[in-house]
Length: 504
Image (cartoon, rainbow, N blue to C red; front, top):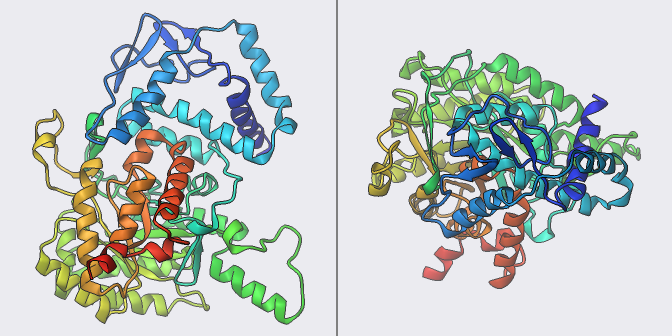
């Protein structure tokens, strides 16, 4: 436990010491531009999305139809490839500076250095296959190796839904931290909220490998994980341990209320601000592959019963394309039975904490499907809808890709327009009465703003994070703030659904 803070300090201060003077260390078969020893010694030539040759790292051309996505990816790789080999003594001196330089930086400078460091390191993960990179990222984050955001978010980005405060509206979607291993580090990195899962009641391995495929030139991924999950037990244990130190916002507010009534101050070390100390954590629930459709609601109610007390909000995921029959649960009859049962189980949770229940839907819906889902959501008092999951559709340019015919859900830049249009339809169908979470294809602050104007109160991303790492977050938040200022909105809430008001 004592080592991890030191490791993080070294990482962030090396960003000032080592990365301020870009460096590279030679290893057999080429050179790796990390400012340190090769962390992937088993990697040979022609691996993943690049190759190591003649002492340099080359990319296969990280480009896409999104100009912003291309420039972000290429600049990171180009910056790495331009490094010059240093003397070993220079590297040691940089490390020494890392240990002694903590006192020389303010918190803001430290955070800026950390994010710069990780923006340069993140492209290295594309040297390995997508699932290995995913697992390695979770491993590092579980150890606490990640950037620490100490700079407060602008007040204009703060928003409150379901009596839960979000410091900013940009969250990490479910699918990255499936088993609740990495979310503490992700929350410290500056996400407005993080959603773990999908978690199934019983452990299951998911679909056979390979099951994740990069389409890097399009900023896209096709996955068919199939709800690989360790089950409720391990996830619940990790969530419970976290909540002992960082209770839900509801529990913090309740305790503060009790303290104010008894005129007591918080005990030393206890959180005083829900926004600062307990960023929202969502728990996404799935069903086991072998659970029959008619009994699927039981898997979701088990999730509510076992994990609900740890969640700031819950999500019922009926829209993954990788579990046979799951999307059938979006039908009106099944959905009404499911959401009624889940809401009843939530209301039956012991204690006063009753987390809001959200529904996650697919982008591949007809207008009739949208109307049915909106009708059920309103009738069952669903607290929110996440729009949307991955798509099974394949645009022509995706079909031409070497992985374009792979089965599974397509995510990333190609999903942006379709998912935003589905978001716009759902906002209209519900009359703006149900808070919506926009998800799909988000890669910039401008993309976040598009989702908000289409009707989203919150926005999630995943694929862009997988490609670019946490270094993208400060840039996205700054860009979103500028978008709000440009159009004269004082807050995120003021901009929600702006496109619909203009049409009137």
